Length: 264
Image (cartoon, rainbow, N blue to C red; front, side):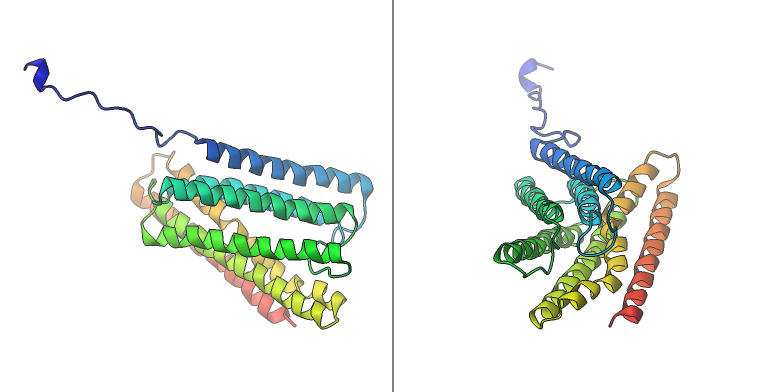
């Protein structure tokens, strides 16, 4: 066959699927720094002491730093399986990363000032911080809802069980966001009606539901990924993921029942 009839060599894709893009690297780095911030404040708590629970404690920068950092890393990784435009995904991830920094930064700032980070309307500055955190929470809900909807509009890619894990992870994450929004909404109502102390206590019943639901988007896809490294058949791996989804959903349901039974 003459060389003129040969097909021209194909150019490699500009961004191979396994390549870590700059935006992803930035989000991973930001998430790792947030996790380190949480761990650093655990050391601060060990040195400084004080209460672990309550509206003013070192627990908040610890747990929020760890949770937001892990969630940012998880969402950055999991959304690589979604079938959405790369430019849209990049924009959403960068906004999400910035919002995570604002949330953890505001909470950490107030912890060092020894004042509550949420539901604090005592001074104009504290009110501004509380409002920024509330608006930031709304942005988080909007961004993660977009990703959740995208996961159900088109089947996510990946190994056996990954599509189920990603969809279930985002669906359960929406439960966590709803619980967080309910805590803020009820607290704001109580604060504005003059019941500041009751506002802080009102969030307790929903905290387990919020915490349990928050990390399904990491745990379930991570399980699917780990199973893809085994020699098990695709059917077996899918069944294991499905069983894990069922167990996670049962845990979320139990936390929800507890919240209903203890909610005042």
